[in-house]
Length: 141
Image 1 (cartoon, rainbow, N blue to C red):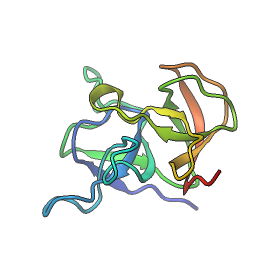
Image 2 (image 1 turned 90 degrees about the horizontal axis):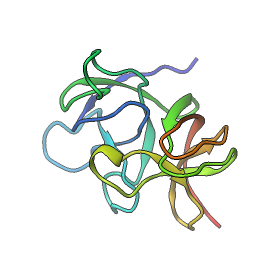
Image 3 (image 1 turned 90 degrees about the vertical axis):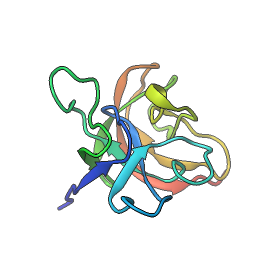
Image 4 (image 1 turned 60 degrees about the vertical axis):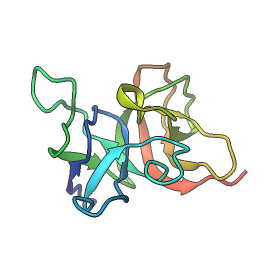
């Protein structure tokens, strides 16, 4: 049975976003995640999962504010993720190369050496949430 440990948000994180481990810094790094951003070269490239579907409270758009606990759907889990572009079922997915409110959305990956988050299980348009299976790997084309 797969288990889902709680992580700590290293910054504001929206629901249904690809997340990566915080690896830089001297304190507060263990079990800390950030919204993933492709192409950063360090933090953000290696997606470990997808943030929880729900918001932290009814009047917030965030799944977690910096320092809050956050559920992350990791490898082997099915998760809802928000599309950052047009998605087709079966496509390999990576995070957008963006910051702020658009970071961590899923886009199609076709470039050699991309850090892939997993695979789309259905079609989606930008801004829609869709099902994926979390399966991180490095794309080789």
